[in-house]
Length: 388
Image (cartoon, rainbow, N blue to C red):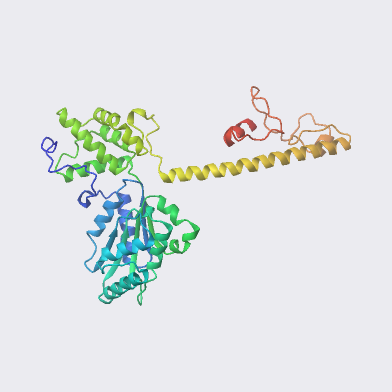
């Protein structure tokens, strides 16, 4: 539609994984290096994770295009399967034969194929995309496949690619044996602002167009709306080019991106990203699964701290009562807990005392009685403020 108007050979911002349009940011270079290292070692599992649309599949296709000819690869995309179904999928991808319903016979068929390839000096790799959907049964089947050993190395190497949920699955204590066989792992995050700008310019140049077709302000707006997710950047840029073509704009400015963001707000919200019109100056950041996990962990830690402070508050109350009782028996005036020691209260205070006294809260904030415990509804921070 807009290719001729903007002098482009093809659409530069499609969502179909295309290795020719892979922008190798520093993060992607690190991820590619981890994959090469793991596969070069020839032992253990390799794990690559990243949020939705961060370019994992594109990176894997880029890797496949650079794998040596002496390598047999089985690429599995359908992961909503049982362990037995996964085994049959792998056999078919290797073209090792037609698997049946007998699991033992299928394992023997795969083992025979792998031994034959090993004897020919070839290397067999299974790449499982969307591995976060694998059940525990299927993950256990993958682990068992790694038991197929040659004289010096495994007959089969496995690469697991998936969303952050995969990392949480692998942390399950029931999968400890699998987790201990992982020799290389990398998490691919979203793009920073400078990386997003370079990404947009790179794809425009790859399509033969003007890499500065989007103004710096437009690219900043795109990064804000997309939260740096490459797939969303592609969708927004493609829609912006359509708008620009309809309005015959030679350059795409931020106002076009704002229009696209408003039109695509439901889709962006469904991807966990705020529309530009809804964001505050400090907003626009995607709450990634990793961040959600960290926030949940912080909430659990705060809950534990609340419980500990509540217990400490009870101890302070008991110590205050015990101190008051001791002072009463000693014939001295009771002193509140935490103000002065028993010996200090019995001595006359000098003209200028050097005793360290607790800070007095502001006059407008009345002190909370010691018997009051933190309330769950207020949360730890509100309770700590009232205590201070």
